[in-house]
Image (tube, rainbow, N blue to C red; front, side, top):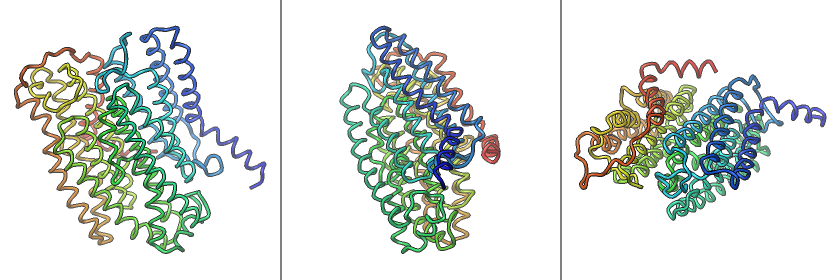
Length: 513
C-alpha cells in the first residue's frame, strides 16, 4: 500500500472512530471541569456538573455508535467495527449509565465528606473521569483485532480499574487496589509473552490476516496452543476467569458498590468478545489444520478452565458471610458459564455467549444495587449477609426484587438466567455430539450439577429475608431507599422476567445486527 493510500485510510477511519474519539474528549473535559470547580464550587455543585456531563457524554457515545453506518477495518487493520462490536459497546454504555445514575439517586448530593466508607459512602469527583477513561478502554477492546491494540486497550482498562478500586480513603480500598495491581501485572506480563510468541511464529500482529492462521497451522500443535493460551491470560484476567481470578473477592469487597457493579459486567462483556475473536481467528482464516489447533488443543484447556471457574466460584461462595464477596465468587462462576458457549466453538455457542452477556448486565447490576439498598436500611457500613434477616416484611418490594435476581443468578425459571444457561449448555451438548469429546460431556454434566450447588448460597439471602426474624438487637432503619433508586432497580428487574417470556427480543436484535 502506497503512502497516499495509507494516509487516506487513516483519514477515512475517523468516520468509524467517532464514538471512541468523543469519549477521549469527554475524559479530558471531565478533568478540566474537576479542576475548575474544585476550588470555586461546592461538593454538591461539582458533583452535579460532573455527573450531568458524564451521563450526556455516555448517551452521545452510545447513540453515535448505534447510528454509525461505518463497518470494516480502521487504521490499517488495527481496529475492526462490526455488529458484534457495536452490540457490546452498547452493553458497556448501558452499564456505565446505570452505575452513574445509581450513584446519583442512591447517595443524594450533599457537602459532606465523600469516600468515608467504600460500601456506603459517596464516591469522590475523580470517579467520573476514571469511569469515562475505563469506558474508552472497553470501547477499544471491542474493536481490537490486532495484538498490539488488544494489549493497549486491556492495559487502559486495567489501570483505570486499579485506581477505581483504591479510590476511597480506607485501608481496605488500598489493600484491594494493591492486590488487584499485583495480579494484573502478572497476567499482563504473561499475555505479553504469549503475544511475542505469536508474533515470532506468524510474523504478524493482525489476527485477521491469512498469514496468522496459516503460520500457526504449520507449527507444532502444542507450541501454537501454548502461545495462544498465554495470550489469553490478560483476557481471562478481565473476565475474572480461572486461574487469574484471585483478585476478584478482594477488589469487589474494597471497591464502592457502583464500581464493583461495573466491574462485574462491562469488562466481562468486552473480554468475552476479545476471547471469541482470538479463538475464531484460526478456523475463520485458515484451513482444517488450523481448525484442528483450535478444536483439539484449545477446546480442552478452555473446557477445563470453564469447569474450574464454575467449581471454584460456587464452592467458595458457600462459605461467604459478606454479600459483596459472595457476588464476587458468583462472578467467577459466571465467567465459567460464559466460557461454556465459547468452548462449543460453534455459531450457536457464540450466539449463546452474546445472549448470556447481555442478560447478565441486568442480573448483576440489579444484584449489587438491591443488596446495597437493603444494607443501607440497617445503618451498617458493611454488607454482611446476616443483616438481611427479617427485612422481607419491612421492605417487601426490594426483597421480592432481590429474590427474583437470586433465582436468575441460579438459572431457574421464570427468569432469563434459565434461558441463558439453557442456550449455552444446549450449544455445548450439540458440540459434544458432533465431536465426541469427553471433556465437553464432563463440563456439561458438572456445570449443570453446579447449578444445584449454587442454590445453597443464592437462596440464602431470600431465606433470611422472609423466613428468619430480625437479628438482635434489632437494627434501626436509618435510611429508607428513595423512590428514584427503587424505580431504577425496577427497570433492571423487569427485563429479567420479561426476557424469559420473550427471549426472541434479544435474539432478533442479534440476528438483525
